Length: 494
Ligand SMILES: Nc1ncnc2c1ncn2[C@@H]1O[C@H](COP(=O)(O)OP(=O)(O)OP(=O)(O)O)[C@@H](O)[C@H]1O
Ligand SMILES: [Mg+2]
Image (cartoon, rainbow, N blue to C red):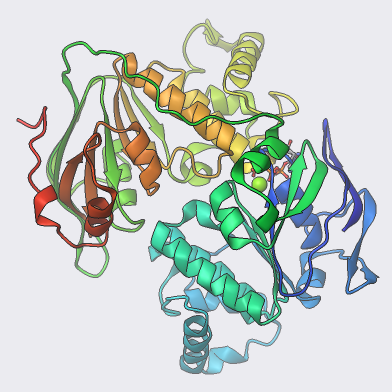
């Protein structure tokens, strides 16, 4: 990609970007939220046309007018937000848009072929499963399989590991290395610097839409990368904890069960209490009941058994910001005030007060470092990380007594993760009761006071964050019970 420029109203998303990938190479693309990574890749896969610049494939200029052109040229992209039809099966999603619908005559053969293709690349998938029943990690495998099925020679993955567990990430990396060894070029976008260094051959860094440079991973470390990204060093330390007043129970689940698919309970007699001034973590591999736990607490799904008590304003940072957190067509202002616009000062005598609303939105945009051309911009035009910051700003700015934070830093850059962690700790210190559901063990260990491990819908063990042993937690997350971690006495479990 040579001298690529792409403007949106109010933003230059890419400015004279140069980016080159070789055959069989895994090439990392790094940059802060809003730096222009997704835009550049959307140009490469034919979704956007550049205002300026040229794309060359094996030395020859090409022009993509639509995604089908890029697919035909062997470019496949796994998007930051999946593009699957939830009601369709895995197999149906894969053949969607194929001109010849021959497979309809023989779905069994198609399933068999897909199963072979999937297992060849270590992608564990059942082609007959409807997509809505799959975990986020499984849905991603469908997207990868879709690109492989269409014989992609350049495979773009936009933050593929943001939604994966450590084990799934290992699996994905093995798949990518295998593909690269066979000559496929891989473009790998991630905010996890260690991972990028471990997986990639070379790395290109974008800052404010411009290329900062391309470096060999072997000559580089996380400090240098962070500096190229943000122009300063980023510091990760766990701040001292403020002392807290007498803790009182704010969120209590008593023997909550939720029916799942295939007769198995998705949640099986979950009991837990979160007190004011503490963060309780739910660790676990994605797909073990996290989604159901989240939905049942916020009332999106009734429990089959058990009771849920919650006291005071509940803030919810949802795991899926696009279906549960934001309305894409609404502006940043409207999304920020989604819960509050009906009340003063945003309304007077039945009339909305757009100026007051815009002012509040601008304050939040500043405080939470949301990068947007304006507060009138529709939220679907924000970069992934900035969309997440809008949700976090709205939820945390309401002085909640209880916070349910599900994968709150998914897709955020290193600086933004640090910021969100600081916000959650400040809320805790102000007395909020926080339940943090996260598949990132590092995040759980950094923030939580107590940790519960969720496995196949059950809490299989508790640990105290200060004394937790990462290996034991990992074992519990995989369904194995190391005996010594099972019965640690908890300060507040009476
Ligand atoms: N369709 C669009 N319309 C208007 N502006 C857009 C659109 N897509 C992206 N932008 C803007 O272009 C800039 C770059 O966004 P982009 O999504 O490429 O960032 P990114 O590097 O992928 O960030 P993240 O890490 O948060 O995903 C941002 O300021 C974003 O708001
Ligand atoms: Mg992006």
